Picture 1 (cartoon, rainbow, N blue to C red):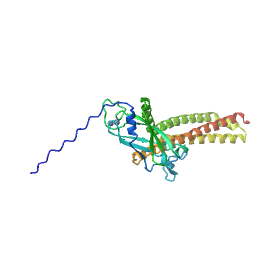
Picture 2: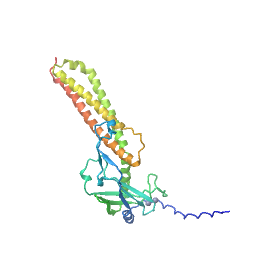
Picture 3: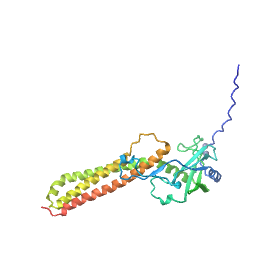
Picture 4: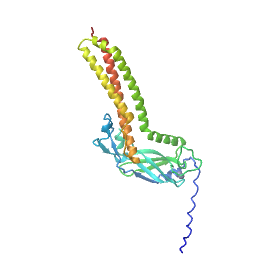
Length: 296
Ligand SMILES: [Zn+2]
Ligand SMILES: [Zn+2]
């Protein structure tokens, strides 16, 4: 009878070193030699549709332009020189809604704070951190050719703290925009509520006393104010709600989609604010006319 030999013992895995937050020249110099790849996904920039509302936003006829080579995401991957676990850094060149197109052409230089983010648990690590604690600065130069690291230097703890802060802000950019939009929706809704109360109480008799053609002009401004206010509310609500998404997205698509939603919402909020200001001006003009126009 065949007797299975006892399986060879796997070589013992060394215990992870304790977490140690430090920025050493040797570490960052070794990181500079890791693989730095251009992310060649089919991610594309869709210009923020601005005024176009949610339904149109999903239309495939919207202009889509490819990301210029030096605006693409870069990906630094390899094993951490300190703990030898796998670490990576996504270097986002520009946000999809960045209007600064000049910066996206030609060579560009970017200073990137890199830190170990291996998934292995290192003892004594603070709960809000990943990796083994090593970090440092890389200067990455991009052009139409391959991106490369041109300089490395050590960082201070403050640099790491702000890098982690920036990552959280980036991840929460859509939520932040929606929270702002919700507050703005509430603000203009109550503003227009005040409008309609004033118009209902004071309006009809006062306007009726204004002589023609001024009466028609006053009505024109009131109607314009109401329409502008409605558009402002609709845009604010669209920014606050966004487009429901049913399809399962990949991580990269979710990143791009979040960028679009945030960019579109930003435009909608901008036009909503302009609409609200125009509505207030139209209403004030109508009120001023009832005071100064000839009346019976
Ligand atoms: Zn590690
Ligand atoms: Zn590490």
